[in-house]
Image (cartoon, rainbow, N blue to C red; front, side):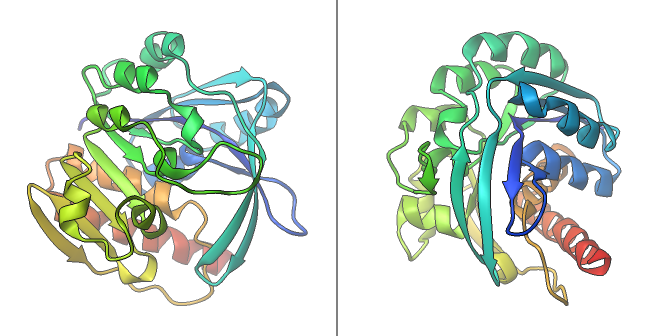
Length: 274
């Protein structure tokens, strides 16, 4: 069983009338790894003031973990209206540096060849950092790091990312909103192929996903779920589940089906607990 890793900053998710909730790619990916019964390694950053509480939260998930303290924890204000959400960037965390990628992150990911890179904003992983992370590894990159502008206030999306980033990505996971920013509302498979990444997966919420790989495109239906759902973190759970399936030799389409089922189980569990 090949090991997998997750690299990304932790976040504080702020919901109206509720205490701050631990968030960020490593948190939701770790929950999916537990659901899969699959070991994984987390390499994370957050602000020094928030580290003790966030460390306790992650430690409870019982996965190998390295959590480094920086100056600030990225924070988002959330509001949901069905599957639609609005976000405000309340605080911006520190980027992952080249020295970190070749230092403590490399040590945390020793012998890990499949890695989910989970940026929260475009500033999280500069090109030189991503290039270092990609040495000897296959990277699945979350499209948030392409389109999310690193500015305080209402979250802004645009396509002004550095295209050199794409040279170091094996798999790109996009939400429907992110994909439309990059290639337009029609989500033409040919336009997704022109991004230059060999494997692109677009998640479409309750409508499933679109997998574009090896010059072919396939729509994958979602696993049905009933009840009122909290979809926060579903993208990261999908990404790590997809990566686990791919690392085990499954095809891109089969991996997307597996990821859809894992996410459905996690969201249904939340609905029952709620």
